[in-house]
Length: 309
Image (cartoon, rainbow, N blue to C red; front, side, top):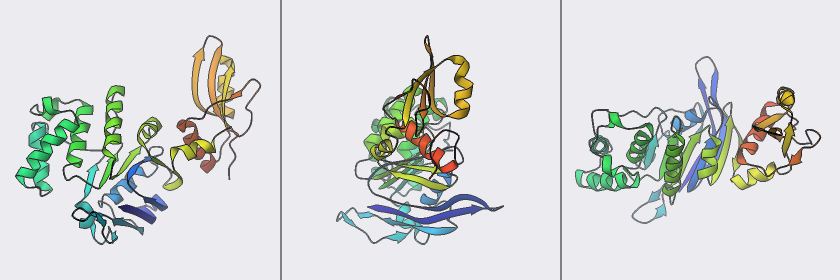
C-alpha cells in the first residue's frame, strides 16, 4: 500500500498558486500535514480525494487486493479515480449533516450512496457507532449533537467502506479540549494497516497522533519526516529565558517565541534561536511546536536569530 505525490502543483484563477511542486511518498501510518491557515493543506486534501485535479504533476495509488493481500498495480488517480474512491474515506473540513436524521439513518443513507448492501451496511454501522462511542445516542437527531459528536459521525461515515486511505481535513477545529483529545485518540487507533492523513494547523494534534509530519507553507513542502528527526533539528536551538515584563515587547520583536508565561519572577519565554538570545537564557528540551516554528522561520526569513539556508 503506497501513495506517491509527484511534483503536484495547483494554480487557481488569477495565477494564485495553491500548491507548488509538492512531492512525498506515504506508507501505512498517520501523516500529519501541518501549516498555517491558507498554506495549501485543503487543496492537497481535495486533490488526494479526487475532488480537484492538479494543474501539474500526478498522484499514484498502490492499493492492496483484499482477497490475496498483495499489492495491486499503481494507478494515476486523475486517470482512474474510481480505483482510489473504492478504498477512500474522506472527512472534509466543511462536513455537513442532515439535522433531522439520526446517526443510524444518516449512515444508512451514505452507505447506500457508497454501494454497500443493506446487510453489510447495518453490521458496519453498528460496529462503527461503537468505535466512535455514539451507540447510546444513535437514535437522537443529529441537529442536537455537539461539535465533537458530529465529527465522530463524520469519521464513522468515512470508515463505512473500511478504507485503505483515510483523509481528515482540520477535524478538531472548533472542538473543546476534551473532544479534541478523544478525537485524536480515535485517529491513532484507526491507523493500523491503513494510510491516515490528518490536515491541521494545531501542532499539538500532530504531536499526539502522527508517525510522520509534513510541514507546508505557501503551497510548498518545507519538511517531511518522523517527529523525532524534526526535534533533533532544533536540539540546542530552544531556550528558556526569564525576562522582566517591560522587556517582553522588545524581545518579541527581536526573537522567535514559541510560548510565554507570566510568573512572579518575570515572564518565562521559550525562544527558538541558533544562538544565545540573552544573558541568563538556558537551553531547553525542544517540543514539536518549536520545530514547526523553526522550519517556518527558516523558509520565510526571520528576525528571530534562526539562520536561513
